[in-house]
Image 1 (cartoon, rainbow, N blue to C red):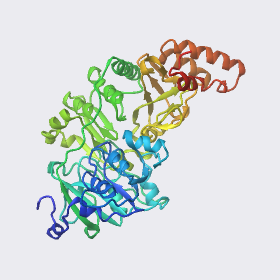
Image 2: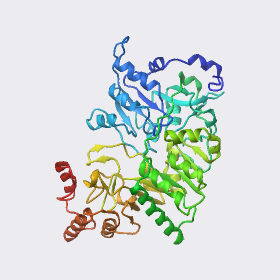
Image 3: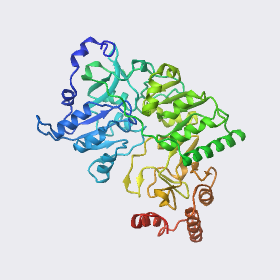
Image 4: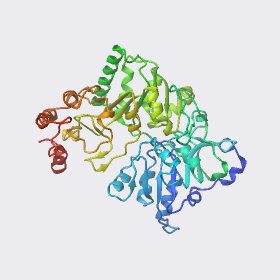
Length: 501
């Protein structure tokens, strides 16, 4: 334990998860570590749910909190806290079906934020301050600094800004992670200095979160593993999407706009993004770099294939099989990785400077290139915008991928008008489906529509959209639409279960 908690006096603060949870009271704002199911608090949240529901020997003690994280939590934490009615307000991202349902019933107030912005709002006092931060760590240093585990997310700023800190020391997370983190926290506006990252492999901060150890009120010991990634393997459609992108990048290299090393890559979490990255193994590109949020299975596949030289992210989220392969040989990758706070990994200044190629996933896209990545039918939240907006607005190339149809062909992912806009046509350069790729750069709306329809839409929806555009152009306008028919496909699906006529 002296290797994990290097200030002897802090050993006296080791308590059970139930005792630690008593520091959290009704109405508090709690910041928890965790970014896409990795490095998340694992024990104290469960004790909070247990306290709210009661046990055979303790009565229920209902209470509610505002819960902030980096992104999604693992271990069913959001599910259990929702079922215990502990969460009143949640931000900035989630992916749990039970919490999602509570959000869509209006029981939990969900604030869907760009992932780079949450701690900016905290730092400026624009939202309620953090009362208690719960941070998973591999160790506490001799100076009281907290060494995070497999993610940083918002943990650094939560710990710095919180009044009190609970640390979960996770013995299942290897001490060899020490040195992989790069903790840099931007100063307050308007006089902050630039973030001095000039390439993906730059290190500009410290390897641990520098805090006053007096703020650590409790330490909980755990050995729970991160939740495994649920990413599914590539299929014919995702392979086709990857193939279209590889061909596009080859064209960009031939045109002299890119080299065979491309520019730093960013890819959102999920099956399509993972498959697209995996597709680079079959391409001609070498000495690639990543400046992204989540480093997933495909990142390490590219390392092992000798294609990827370096990856910067905010978390490592892996399948069970890949987790064992990576963490049993972490020294093999240690000089090729850096983990940063999400406000740095997603910072517009750095994204714009490095010329990131951003590859993210859309729920639906409309004929002019507007993208919906969050809401089903314009009303029901899925997960949240995550970091896609941070990258889409500022990337060298902003690419969105989606399968052209869903639900066995009953839904078209390309529609006349998206039912909710997360990324406007001004921020979207490339749309890719298994059908093909639409390069929207330099195209006016009237030129974008036929490009998207011809290249990205499967029949019979292609013919339906061509008819829609033809009728809309008769009515005229810079961006022709038939407002009385713009959402007819969504309405038809709601009423009949299919967008088909």
